[in-house]
Figure 1 (cartoon, protein in one colour):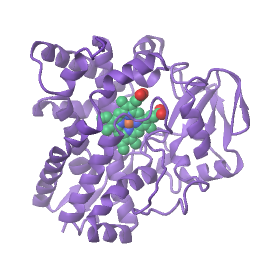
Figure 2 (cartoon, rainbow, N blue to C red):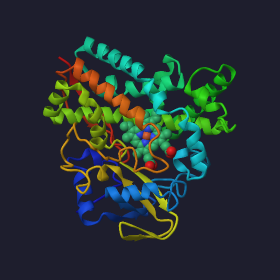
Figure 3 (spheres, rainbow, N blue to C red):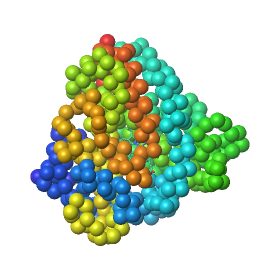
Length: 401
Ligand code: HEM
């Protein structure tokens, strides 16, 4: 089978990437993917089984997030220092300190307190859409929801929402000409977010509020605090990690309902199913397709020897359809319970900080949609994002009547 997992257009082909990933799980579960001297990337081990992805994710000592930063191409020298300060690119014990400082802002209690606000936003979005009759589900519902929630978390003024939205698109969609005219827009947008966060923190130092930003810039009980730079980078991470992922989960979930109308009827009949549906959507869509690590020593993954400094890429999208873990993995079943998907990561130090928040947003959104828009229907083809990293949908026309 011809497999190019680096192809930015992979997701836009019929059946892909699941045909390729299923073949790898069956025939070469820890697969050496050749590099390409011309495109200047060195090759990597593609890890596709659930158990192996979990092993790699939980052993930060053997599989580092800080060594060799990039997924495929190397990160340009001038961006490396900044990237290394980002939590996602660190290993314990350095990562542990930062993670515990930011965990203070993301406790289940703090996230739960947002439920009413999230419900209000969902109703507002539905009210606006209803006034028009037909809308683009991505632009009008799936995209504004997480964006408004992140802005709320940051205490950013309403008039800044569009600006933050565009930066986020440019960073993630740097490979897609609809979002960024040229790939250098990504790093430029990142610098804008960085400066924005800096100004936000400066303002809160002067005028503290009862919000997450204030909490994060204040010392914890042990007197530890995020440095200015760490805080700015954390905001950058939030804008990327919390925004696009949830948007794509919501759009991909809606598309899954259109493709499985019996599941939509089930949800409309019993909106309380939105709780298990949220997990099934994350399993089915796997909005983050993959992540990378680097081996810190000669070791084995699923019996395959790998060498120190080899790049390892874990495919959540594959693990989430692993026949050894899920009964009928190719069936979208909103009542699936238990659902040990690893769409938020395979556990360990970097497990998604926003997983409670993302699930809350998805649950409330689909409850509200099932209650208020039971006749939602697809009105045109979904267009997919050009990316091998993010499983994204750019537009999904719908009618509401
Ligand atoms: C990390 C997925 C929503 C913040 C991650 C990772 C994945 C992921 C796969 C990496 C795990 C690893 O390397 O082991 C998702 C998905 C989401 C989602 C599928 C939506 C459906 C969010 C939200 C936020 C968020 C809403 C914040 C508001 C983060 C952060 C990290 C992270 C800060 C880095 C954690 C660390 O390095 O310690 N997420 N995420 N994510 N996510 Fe999410």
